[in-house]
Image (cartoon, rainbow, N blue to C red; front, side, top):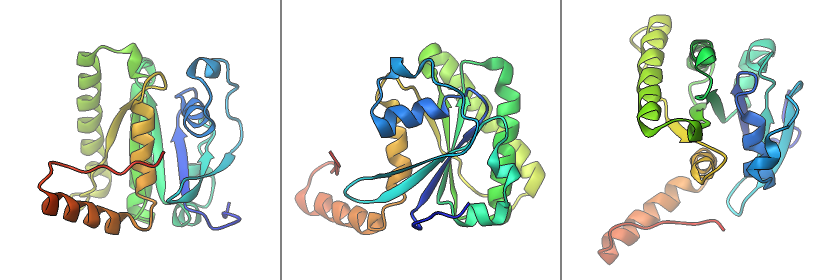
Amino acid sequence: MNSEVGLPRILLAGQHYSGKTSIREVVLDGKAPHDTVYLESTIAVERRETSSDFVQFEVHDLPGQTDELQLDDTQTLLNDTHAIVFVIDCANPDNKLSALARLIETLVMVHRHNQNVSVEVFLHKIDKLTEAQQKDFRHEADTYVKTHVVAEVGREWRATVPYHMTSIYDNSIFEAFSYVVQKLVPQRAQLHSNMQLLVSNSCIASAFLFDI
């Protein structure tokens, strides 16, 4: 599964019907959220190239029922991957523990094979939860994951797992995906340094860089 053009790769992973393909269609293809309701389930890896002014990359949407992270050569796959977006359906409590178990497997694989891969967790479909429920879900997920990953790999695990509360029906999904893509920008460190310099020399509170 080598990239044909050597582009930075993002893997979209997660369980069946977690919302991975809807995210891809809305964020990368500009599809309206209500048009993704009847999308067919992903049955094979779907690759999509995309680009902005700062970075060109490709997204691989993994089928939830087979999870290529387990089927493919793990070392090769992770060597060619820059980020994994792991999507969990917050609106399906029946699958919560199995989704978290798969997330833990993914984190353990990354820890053992390539710790340079960034794993970003999208706690998805939050539009179906109250704010209190969202907060409880995030806290429970974070506690469960930390406990079980440490049990698997030991106390040397020091990785920080970013959690993003997302929905395709508001801007949260674009903001979360933007954080992932920003980490692929080669000039990110220099841009960050320049913006900090601007803030300190101009006596302003903060500065933002937009790619429109």
